[in-house]
Length: 132
Ligand code: RTP
Ligand code: MG
Image 1 (spheres, rainbow, N blue to C red):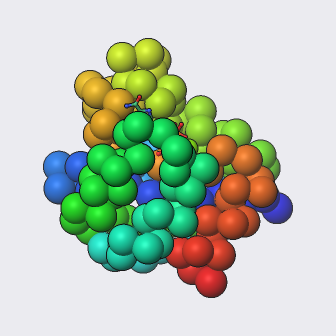
Image 2: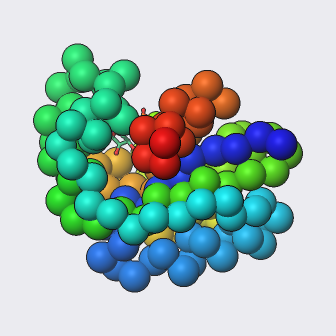
């Protein structure tokens, strides 16, 4: 059974959207396998988003993701990675379809509520970082 790493980002936690996010994954039929409320240390943030290290928004991204508590989760089920990305919606909320989390709850790319792994390999890496 495939697993994926999902987290409600600091904007989603501070807006009280943890329950809404969890509901959507439960409604879809995925199973919750692990959960942790935590504030991400700088070093973990830099490793988690390591693929973006050279991008101009990297500093802001790390600052944002460490700015308050996140709600980290592991969800499992058939094609969990792909199904989770579809529930979450496009990276830019302006392009995310209504019915997706980002389409329904977010406006701008800097604060888009939730993270989901982009491949099964990323999922295993991220689950190791956060729950290993
Ligand atoms: P995430 O990793 O957070 O689930 O988002 P994603 O896969 O949909 O998008 P990704 O390309 O991995 O980007 C990671 C996060 O970086 C911020 N971002 N800002 N200013 C920009 O052009 C820009 N592009 C990406 C977003 O917050 C995105 O979620
Ligand atoms: Mg990503």
